Length: 379
Ligand code: GMT
Image 1 (cartoon, rainbow, N blue to C red):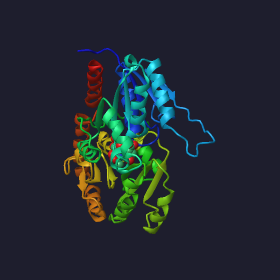
Image 2 (image 1 turned 120 degrees about the horizontal axis):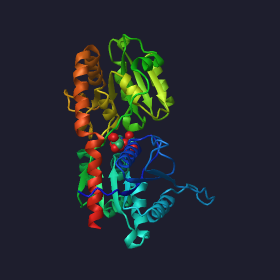
Image 3 (image 1 turned 30 degrees about the vertical axis):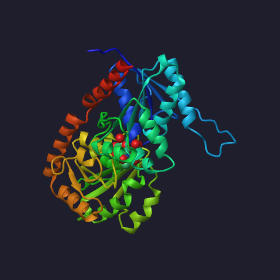
Image 4 (image 1 turned 45 degrees about the vertical axis):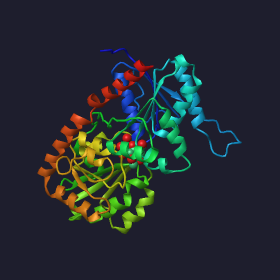
């Protein structure tokens, strides 16, 4: 088997959001396996360790020209991708999220002489297809980029079907699911629960998300307000966004003493390990990385059965699924777990085994490497 180290460029969003988190983990795992990895972003990805050997970060500089009413990122990104591809002799440019990364990668490839052109891979994560793919201001650009890449992957079967439906892409789409490699928690569960002020008699329910509209924080709070008894739990929201707009609903539902919010958290491991189970109420989700993050710590999740979530959780085996739009159903499922620690444990253990078997770095990273090698060989 050919195991020569590869030179790979990764373009992604560096901020809190599944696509950037996944791309960052992929880069780190590729570097650990001896490959040369280059991140090309407007900021250093927030979960990229400062001292990661084998990884170089290249900043895309955006000039604030007076003529531009809105700053342009796509072109400076394409220029930087071409520059790094040329100087570092990249064999693969892997764009995470269609806009502007896949568009810029396709453009950058065209600017390079034939012998220096890397293979371009695009991985779709969800909202790039389900939201922007429907937007007439983006759809033609997305369709063009996806038709021009050398390989297209999605993180779930659901997203593959949605992409085919919305973009009419003719060439094959490979499903490579998300993975998660947890760091070791830095604090004990009891230290974390003490920090949060959670009493030993209370179960800790965990919601981790960027709070964007699809996450339906309104439904989350509505469901939590229906859980009985109220004294049995606290809800921890690890927020990758500003929670202030939801404070009024928390107050209206009388949940002030039940809800704990932590913002600006880069590493979720301490919280996942200290929680009892997760709660996700999204109206759309292509995979839902935060469910997987909880699974790796043997924590099951109660989640809405939307999009790719049923590919991650097997209902009744590794978590509990509830049809979308049923706050009572979510509350009843949460109550089942609150009342039955043994059920929590059983589902949690199955969730952890499933995460290891299907969604671990050892399972998923080789699939990307195999794809890269296939494309390089074809060139
Ligand atoms: O909408 C978000 O949560 C962010 C978005 C992203 O790309 O950053 O998340 C999407 O990608 C994640 C990683 O592949 C998936 O786990 C999420 O399910 C997906 N979100 C949606 O499809 C809404």
